[in-house]
Image (cartoon, rainbow, N blue to C red; front, side):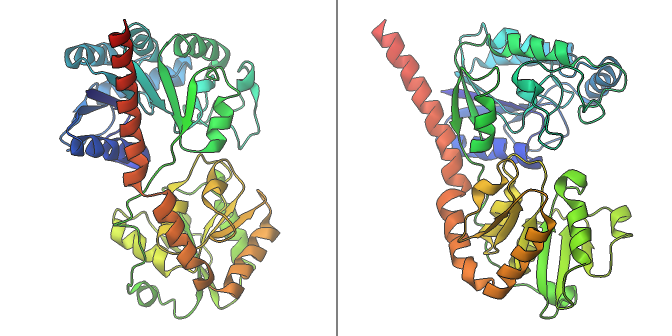
Length: 409
């Protein structure tokens, strides 16, 4: 069996790490596999880059000026397909195919004729909309029937002039639904539910939760309290790769006006500009590339707060749980699926009062009330070894099914 994964990045970002973790699981099974990627650099041995910076810049320019993201990068995609034909994989596993690096028309015309098993893990909603990767924040449901007059043209993937959401919607529907043997994977039940209402609804849809490295994310002792002069204060933690309105930045600012003197907020992923405007009871930490440092911060916190207004299945929730820290989250997208009453509190989306009350509830009960169940749930549900083994088993099952069909004929 040979497996090829295709993703925007390799080894970095959430999707890049997932692709590499799956690849390592395949390596353990002695299965030949490759990751084709188009953005950034990677030293991962199974990674193969195609395209390049010039290709990405042209694709970005085309998207900005002409408005049809995903339909440029023709030469790069032809080179990719040439390599695919040389490798001749049994399974082609797609991840993020947006990001200004690949031409979906050329790719899917090949996929519809190559007689390979196609698996597509959706990490957002771009696959079934005419433009955006998320629409929950603006409450748009045009994707159910036909995208048009897109309210998010200025959001990723940004178009500055033309609204071609209707055209892209119909082209994507025609291309994507023309593939015969495809299984769609989503990391959350929430996203699976959306897919089942979209033009992709007739495909086999399965849920495989994202997993995390439990050898890295676990309760750790550290000097974080001393380093940031926290003393015995109750620590409310927020973590994001970058903070903006959709990640709930303003809720932390609003909460800072209400928390008590024995409470303090820490936010990881803050920009220098944001740090300059933070109130005194919010400690802003720029993004850390040290997993150990991040796990130490999670472990130090008394509660992890995720007031996201738009999310598929945030791994930050999983990382906090694995470090024994209870989670408070809005009932947004797939964020609530990792939290129950033994591991935290789910709050009505946008309800600041309930957010504050939930923090006080966890403070009253104490972190130890939740910690053991948080760790237990992370081991049971979110161990990346178990989660990504599901992909390997899915590959094997499909190959065995194809062999049975051949033998039967």
